[in-house]
Image (tube, rainbow, N blue to C red; front, side, top):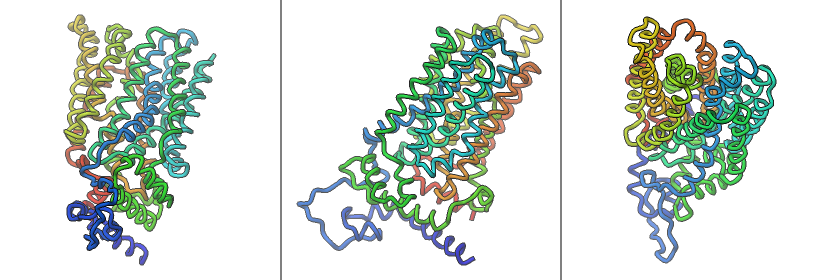
Amino acid sequence: MERQKSIMERQKSMEAGLLRKSLSIRERKHPHDDGYIETGLPSKRHPNHNESKKHQNEDDKCSVTSSVCLITFIVVTGSFCVGCGVGYSSVAQHGIVSELSLSVAEYSMFGSMLTLGGLIGAVFSGKISDVLGRKRTMLSCEVFCAIGWLCIAMAQDALWLDCGRLLLGIGVGIFSYVIPVYIAEIAPKHVRGSFVFANQLLQNCGLSLFFIIGNFVSWRILSIVGMVPCVLHVIGLFFIPESPRWLAKCGRDKECRAALQQLRGHDVDISIEANAIRDTMEFSKQSGETHIMELFQKQYVYPLIIGVGLMLLQQLSGSSGVIYYASSLYERGGFPSAIGTSVMATIMIPKAMIGTIIVDKIGRRTLLMASCAGMGLFSLLLSVSYSFQSFGVLPQLTPIFTCISILGYVISYALGMGGLPWIIMSEIFPMNVKVSAGTLVTVTNWACGWIITFTFNFLMQWNAAGTFLIFSTVSAMSIMFIYFLVPETKGRSLEEIQTLLSSSVH
């Protein structure tokens, strides 16, 4: 009881300090005064004007350096690998089924093995990234991905295909947690959304690449192509720093400051940010690591509902099924799959770039609700299209409606629900619960994704129109969930977001 009381008192003190943060920054006169840095009070000592001065790293004016841009680009190369893995099952379906004589059930199992592997990887993603660090965790992911691609390329039966896809999924599952977390921990707060959204942008680049070249090369060569970005990513990871927040959590303050200096620029004073990170880490250490069952305490329930809810709604809206089996959806509607996937590939990168640009201007909530509205509308249109087809009504319009619906759905998904739940997941949990909470949220996403990808083909055989009517209903429910429960996190530091969520449950 005494320990809990002490923790609560310290948390209230930290919350009050964070709320006074902007005021104390404005009051600061001498950024190099050690006394000020520790206490937040103005110093009586006058600076030596002959000393070389660094620009103060005030949160609202923190510049985006070329270093942080390059590091983010290297990190999201892993997201490119994820996109290649996700897009593979759509363009390779005809070749694999024909050459290896797979049934619908066998290919559905192969397609869903990525999400099953992702589920396995997600279970251990938080703990692995906490023990090994963000950087070494990403290196280990590429080992799984490279071996997985090699197994698929050499496969002679369904077993080898499934094993390769499972290994690839494990790497992808860990990536889905560690990449957004790493970027959120290094990016300045006023561009954090755009930087984390680059994760979605590079995933779309990987999807586009495979959707285009998959129409011209065999499925075995395509799997060899998938190994190339894995190798490039491994090389790039040797040139980036570890996450400053992870270093601070491990008590490696000197390395934390060195990493921050590299990220913010060598002419910038990083003392305020470094001290804020240090104070947060000290509080996290006093609170202790939180296990899964402890997440259901009152102070963590609200962010947990947000994180788990967004991941459930993302998958239950049918996103994985549409992307994994896009070719078969086009064929069912009477539209040429090669043309459909090529058009998808053409628009994927521009639409993701738009999302990257506007996420920190419009805000998370507005973009999420707009995304869900678009997904619901185009799911409903696709349901109507398949209904017309089944009744023989307006058969000449069915292919056009099918193409418009799938493209509209994918565009809407990529603008919001594709990347924003991962951004919000990386923002809302304090460091002392990030491992267990992030693991639970990521597992929820991959478990639900596996259910959707495995059952999708069977649902389409049951009733294609009814399937997309269900997806449309889920999208409508998502809008209500976001409107009433999801807060706006745009423009706030990670510490300020966690203070906001903490105060809302008291």
